[in-house]
Amino acid sequence: MSNDGLRLEQVRRSFKQGKDSLDVLRGADLDIRGGEIVALVGPSGAGKSTLLHIAGLLEKPDSGEVRLAGQAAGNLSEGQRTRLRRLHLGFVYQYHHLLPEFSAAENVILPQMIAGASKSKAKARAMDLLGRMKLTERAEHRPGQLSGGEQQRVAICRALANAPRVLLADEPTGNLDPHTAEGVFDELIKLVRGSGVAALIATHNPDLARRMDRIIRLEDGLLVEG
Ligand SMILES: Nc1ncnc2c1ncn2[C@@H]1O[C@H](COP(=O)(O)OP(=O)(O)OP(=O)(O)O)[C@@H](O)[C@H]1O
Image (tube, rainbow, N blue to C red; front, side):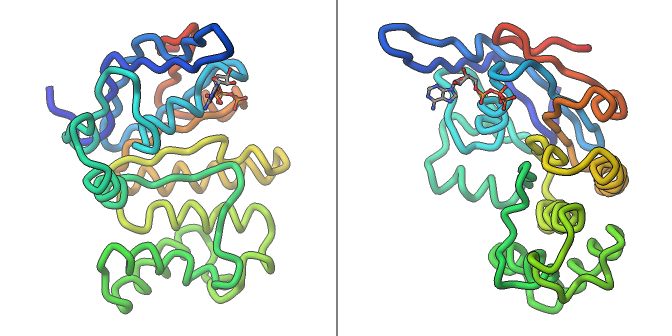
């Protein structure tokens, strides 16, 4: 069946470690539809970041297919992969990676302009996203003038700026104290639900994982439900 979100089919990835090969992904299957929020859990070193890099077209699998917004990525050129990534993917990392010399609003405006939006449209969307994250008053502040929670909320707005079909997040609240993490996570969930994006969020926090629609566990190189 078609899926306009994210689909992985029999994804395999191994790394050479000396004479041995470490089989991190051994045929991982995944299907996330628009509007679904899925937690990716598993012990440290299980391969969650590797899986997110492959799903985000930052790395290629040894075999298997990644389908993004209905399009198979396997046979695309580097240029086509970059375009697909720009059009359909948003990323949130543990650290915000905002541009320090630009304001919060500019950090959300820039990716839209790179994708071809006019400045006025990009600004209107940035202010709308920042408003939904309760950051209107902070829009003109630079990242260094914001709290850790606020920085991460701006990073979430930036990830959603181009209305991607798929949002990938690697421990998005992992750097924050538990109370702040909970608040940022609530806002993330609200924004994601309102946008219809397919979201895959890696977390070590079982309380946060339980609040998503489904939990997928990475175990011995395979993805299992629950
Ligand atoms: N480029 C690489 N070369 C060799 N080994 C790698 C490479 N990338 C990852 N690995 C190995 O693959 C395994 C999975 O790593 P990965 O970072 O995906 O795990 P993770 O589940 O995200 O861990 P954590 O929860 O600690 O972030 C680890 O044993 C790691 O050392």
